[in-house]
Image (cartoon, rainbow, N blue to C red; front, side):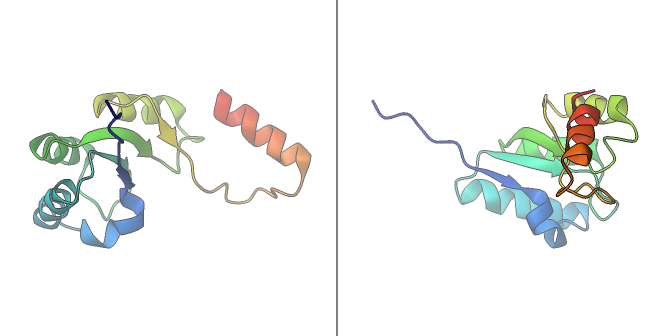
Length: 116
């Protein structure tokens, strides 16, 4: 028996299709119909809030595989609480603004900050 593959989508990459609850509902329906079974939600003001997005994901049979939150370093507890509230143990931090990733010391500090 062949193992079924899981297909997920990072909603940050299609955020322009999620600016209203109606758009989010339609977009999540279309993703599910296309064969996606999970999404990574993102905490941005342009998208409906997490409880609404979680409810829509549930309605369309989409698991939440992570939470994209660029403010995780400022408030890690809130980020983890948000991820758990939508059924995920993972928080994605995508872009370390103001950190020079060519500097090994800054990279080590970023790693330590994220692990904390």
